[in-house]
Image 1: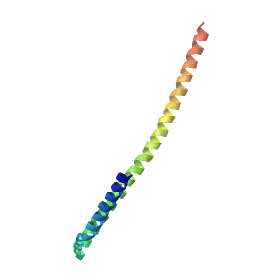
Image 2: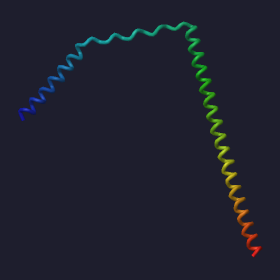
Image 3: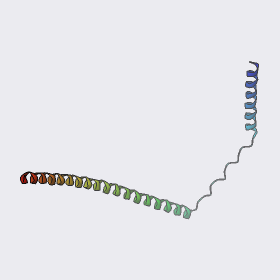
Image 4: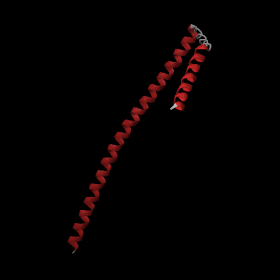
Length: 103
């Protein structure tokens, strides 16, 4: 029990020492203030941001059009597969009918 109290007391004093040393350290100097931009610099930056925005919009439009074409294409593929199945069914039925007539 005595050992447990010694460990607790040691932890307490270690924590207290860290707290005191943290308060005694010098505070970091605030970062230097950002430079004030000139009108030309602000204009260039805003034009660059506008260009990025236009490019993003263009990319988004391409994605939307591509997704639309994929959906339309899938619809056509599905319709084509349905037509193939229907045609194969008709061919099989016709061949069976022909075999039955020949017998």
